[in-house]
Image (cartoon, rainbow, N blue to C red; front, side, top):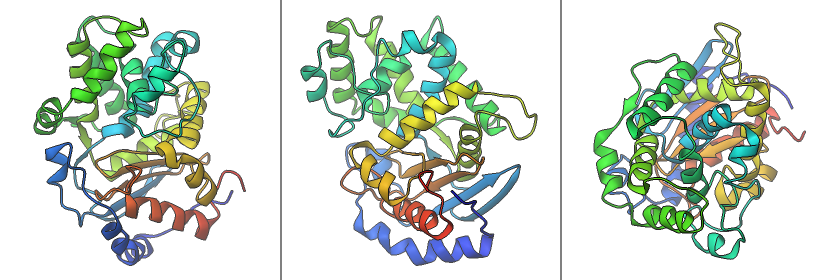
Length: 311
């Protein structure tokens, strides 16, 4: 694996070249607020050792959506340890879509296959320590503030409201798991925390810093201390490789070989072992639910700079 050396001018030129790939995707219709995003948004930030390169819509605020799953997983593992967390959620990739309920019906016991699909993420969120939903989301936000060094990051209430009104499938997943003793407690409270988790908004620069810390064994580039324990950072990074792009993860591993996670807002985070983090936004999604132009950007950068961890 080589290192990524790119300047603002080259990154801006690359975004302009790859912008047409957004036209191959489509906007998510099942969350109205996301469907209203500007499909022409395209931004990227690259962060390493406190140095940042950014281009396009890198300062635009967007919601984490499923990118939040890597952060909640790290926090749940820090709260409870591996044995507890993986008693509730598996470690295996799935060939099914991210919102599948079929896999839960087929598994015995009915625990989700991995933390990157919706059912798995709900199970993980239920494990975040806290005596109330507000305390849980507060702890998650504090963790994100620490990872980004940006205390202004908050929940986009407008997006949360839109998701709350269209949460029937996630509600069904939650109650199904409760009925099979995978998770317990109040499911409506859990849904509220999960929806707010997905609705946390930041920009590409914030996301790139998170990717940098995950990539560099959880170490903060400013203080040098580990915000995330190294083993947990490795676990998270491994899930990004095996499950981060849903049922396109294997293909992406071959084409790019970069630990990355996508979200249906068109967000992407990448975490390289040398501490290079990337944050990307481009809302139109491919058929697997990943940013169409964003994936092409990561594949292009991986090929040009030999970034694959399998090199």
